[in-house]
Structures are given as C-alpha cells and as structure tokens.
Image (cartoon, rainbow, N blue to C red; front, side):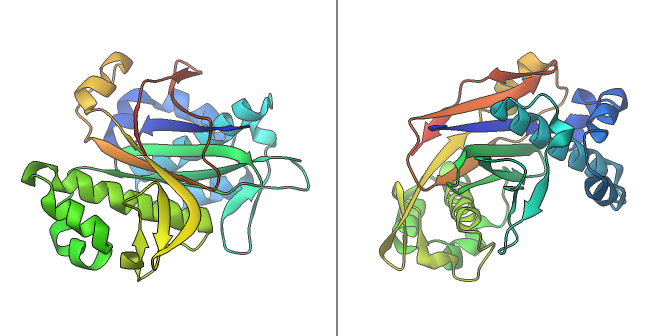
Length: 256
C-alpha cells in the first residue's frame, strides 16, 4: 500500500439520526468480547453508541483495505507503547492504523505495513485556544497564528494542535507537556529544531451544511480539522465516508 486511506464519519447527536439502533446492532456483533465489555462500561447511551460505531467501522474499514471478507475475524493487540495494532502473528503484512474522534467526527487512517501512522481530529468551535497558544505553539507556529485574521485564528490553532497530536500518535508517545518543542509549521515535523523524519498533512472538512447535506443527516455539525502523520510521504491520500453499507470516495482539501 503506497497511499493513505482516511475515513471520516459523524458522531454524537448526528450519529443518532444516521445510525438508528437497528443499524448499530449488527456492528455490535462485529466486536470481540473485550470491545463489547468496554462498550457496556459507558454510562452515556450516546458515548456507548459512538464507541460501537467507531470500532465497528474500524473493523469494517480495515477489512475492506485488506480484502478480508469477515471484519469480526480481525484480532488486535497493544504495542509496548500502548498503541493498538493488528496482531502480527495472525495478520501478516497487516496495515498500520490510527483512530481518533471528537465530539462530532470520527477519523480512521490506514497506512502501509510496518510504517507507523497517526491521525487526530478536532472540531470547531474552540473556546480556549487563546489561552493555550503561548504554551502549545512552537515559535514559527505562533508567529503564523498571531498574524492570522481574527476569524481564522481558531482554525489555524486547531490545525497545529491536530498536527502535533497526530505526530505523537505516530511516535506512540501520547500527549506530552512540551508541545511547544514540536514545530509542525512545515511539511516535516521538527522537534527542538531538528528534523523528525515525519511528514504531516491537514485535511479540512467542509462546513457541515455542505459536507453532510447529501447524506441525510439532520442538524449542523461543526467544521473539523484532521491531521495525518506518516514516515514516508504517500503517493496519494484518499478520503472516504460510509454510506448505505459502502465506503464512498469523498472530495477533500488536503493542506500539507
């Protein structure tokens, strides 16, 4: 696989109109025993439904990219750094993947075998970005954010935030305290001024009124920003959504 496949899907209140119980139930059947246990641990019906949709879609999307006819047969393990992965003893040359969700969107990224990938999605509006900018943004990022028009500052900040988190998922580190040392203002991430060998791209989802209108989703979702981090620049990035039981190619703006 010399390309990245990114799947986006609505969550939260929008998922209730898009995914009624009769559709969510078969996805629940795809989950393994531990995933079902985790789903039942949620007290919120919406969060439980989102978990089932996210992990059911993860299985379906991975199976689709692997040409595996039965998503329920996929087996997962956790790496030494705590990153979920397909069990290499069962799935040889299995693709790498990363999953993220915000209050409104799910994002799943799938890349080549033995080549780490990280994805992060966040949704607007974002109320606290002004307070975080001083401590989160690297010097070059801060200068670009500071020069941005007032009505674009939240989006600019969100792009850098998602790029940093995608990079940390790529490395398997998780969230750290020194985000200001990670500079994602260029295509190649720099840490403490040194190149990291990781390339990041940003995918801006269209406003909800445009993006979801053709899918019959009631209500308006916030715009979202998705960041993808990978070691080797892919030849292509394909963006998909799930509709009527199939994965459908979607137009997307990619900012690298």
